[in-house]
Length: 425
Image 1 (tube, one colour):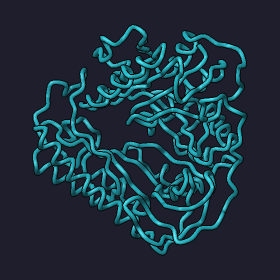
Image 2 (cartoon, one colour):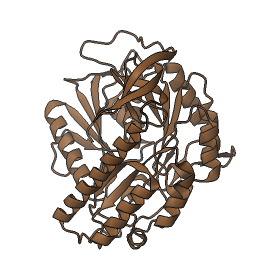
Image 3 (tube, helix red, strand yellow):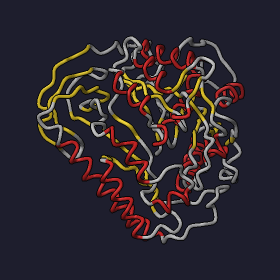
């Protein structure tokens, strides 16, 4: 077998894991195709029941059009057998993320024309620095499928960041399941030191963190972000609930006051968050407190997750809030989030920003706000806000600030289109 396709569901870490499998298969001489590939890899998610359903559907659909399908990722490692009954050409790979590329590549087998370096043809690269979680949130299945927290050596991380920049990536996102737990004790690295050194990589225009728990938003890290020119003024900090009773029931390690206090010094940052609605025993008053905390913290974008009981967790058997109530609260929270986003975008009118163009006609500013702007992909342009639309901030004018990297690459076989890792989330 010589051709493959890859799909992933879920978070940025799932994307990184899918890309690691892709790189290994390319390095072994296989060809990535958008359609009609012999092998499919579906990197799955299990954070909610709906995520497992979508993962199973993606694997089932791939089984009809590929000779062999490898189901990898969190869904494959879930204790409940969510992929039972699929066709015989589906192989469920229940292994740690670090071991999966080697297993899949070994099972497929190497062929000729081995490539020395497989690049990802896009502006943004994700670099995983940490995996697993040693916390025990009542609702979360991730520690069960990802294992205990562990960190990559700083030298390996910084080498990958340099390699991505040399490949032409203008932005690097440091990712992890519990990113704030990053430590390389032997080499003396905290996340703050890693940010400083990664941000100093030649050719790198922007550095971001994927997500971080509020308990890890400490002065040392905030100072590193402020003093690193490449570091984006954006943080994604999960809240989950703004009600202290619900937070205790979730086994979260903070209260609403701590969340607000830790984010207080970041008023100039673009703050985004995750919230679970309809957690067992969440009443209307608790939900209103969540709305209030989101507003007081200055959060501009909320990723809303209706509560879904997961097998093996402390609340696996609890689901007391009606589905209709979850839908209503989800819609109200999304509406508030949309209003907050538009309000922040309007603050950009008349203000200059540096926008990294990552697709035709679009890009992201220094604080990860979306802009509608003309420029070459990979170009960093200086813009001034003119107006706001439902899709982002409309730039009045732009001028080139830094020349984009060369995006040429070797000819690809018919049917291939560069990186074809497809998101299903």
